[in-house]
Length: 158
Length: 384
Image (cartoon, rainbow over all chains, first blue to last red; front, side):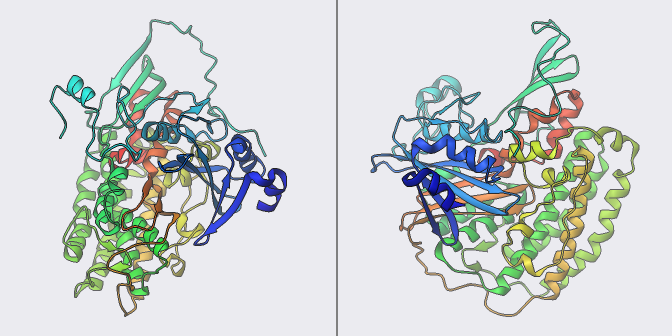
């Protein structure tokens, strides 16, 4: 399967394996297409998880990871791509309905917007919160003090 | 391969007999403080009289930033935090986390440890389903099952207390195996529990399964088809009740589940009644697994050789287990230091809750309560 995909997309895909788990690092430009192909042709019909990681020292700071599973083949793969700060990704909601809240959480925690998402707003934090907590430059004890003071009426949550 | 689904199959939302700005449409808030939302869940309902036209869930009231904390604690220090996410089934959370880190470290827990892990995890599944049954029945109006299930759940909690000192947030497992050897009399007590518990499932079924009120309130309520389940990413008993015979313990076995013989119960209609039957059958299968595990408990060490200071080599791993609520996954990125670089928890309740909107459209308000109960969500897991 990977050989076929590599054949079609050439250098944009790199297939790797770590402790027996297969994952692909793909170029940002291939993103909606690869996910579409994986779902429609390779039967990866279950989007398990969408998450991200922040590497501030790198030029393309964010790693966005889709974990996909195929019921028919009983196989799980990960698709990883790297994007820069401020870049956006096409939403996977037209491909898997379950990507809806998963992408909202990535936006909430990292600030990565997904184009074409029906409801791109924060999910776990209050809508008016400023800052994206899971980024590495957000402190462990940091809070949006303005929101806390206005909405909760206390000086600070600490 | 069929076209990707962009809307719910069994409801055609575009055809509305009444115009959009009809004065009968009511927006009601089922606020975060509510006895039946199983935690702090806010549901904004759009109603036409008593019929639900749509709903929106607002979550995040219990968000504690567990994933951020994970980046500032060592691997062993983070272990107790994972219990607090799905606080009803804490042992399963610990199992998932320990197994994921063991994958990163490339160690495997010794056979005795894996056996005891299976026993405790299956006991946890029974305890979680008992709590689910009690609270779900209570929401629908049947008060007695609550007392029965909580009384019987005490026996399991007593076993946990004797084993690791805690009833609810057990922190039972360690990375590489177990810390505590099973106490003297552990096997006997577990076997006594099984003999005590088997007739209890029949007792719960006698109260509810053929009860006219229960059947009327749960049959054809909250139907979700198998394609919708797969498209939404719903897993666990909800998926199995819609007819998909899939369980991670069989599909991608972990912790020596392949040595045990058990069935996967499935339902046909995907309604609340089927989900109830599936969970009751799962409790029986768990009893079966525990029985086999207790009889075959091997001797041996309980902890693999793990370094005191854990520094897994840089890499990423995703591992998931079949928690009582669905697929609980952990995605851990290690950068070679003593603290994880990124811990991502894929909570089953979070993904299952997305399907609430699709399941509730066209139902009555009273059914919304039944459907929230049947999804078996725990807000600690949804919000982390």
